[in-house]
Length: 204
Image (cartoon, rainbow, N blue to C red):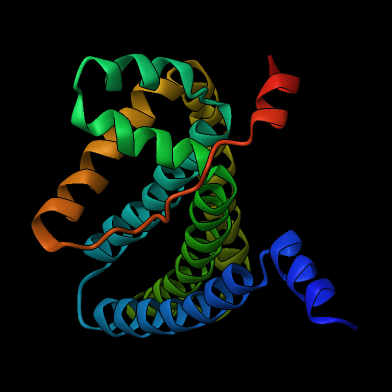
């Protein structure tokens, strides 16, 4: 295989991003799992349930961003950028990097939230069994697992409608946060990506 072929294959399938996001997912999943499980073991049941709900909401929140970025169009942000709205430039970057942004929000954060919420749910089950001296925890496990799944799926279904209806507003607010991080910390999370005129013409 020639270098040109290897380069085109890497660019086509974005191998650098795939490898990077795979490693980050592994590291983040480990860190969040260890932190949350260690935290849950040392607090009471009510706080444990609150943390569980927060984790589920985080997954839903990022899922909304991931869907919004694939639904949003560049044109409204170009108009804002022409009016010297600073955050509009970053909003354009988000839309142009829609594949990577949605992959990170929907897949990376979504899967990590699912893994961590499952681990927290298991810890809560063990705590309930020990506190109330439950002999058979199978029914409790089924109920709590089903509750976590239903809240996650229902929340994401509701969030999907919001993301499609208010995609531009969501992306702009996300751009405000990213632009703030860039200015204050000097951390530019997204790379510059040129507009693909052929694809845009097809979309139009």
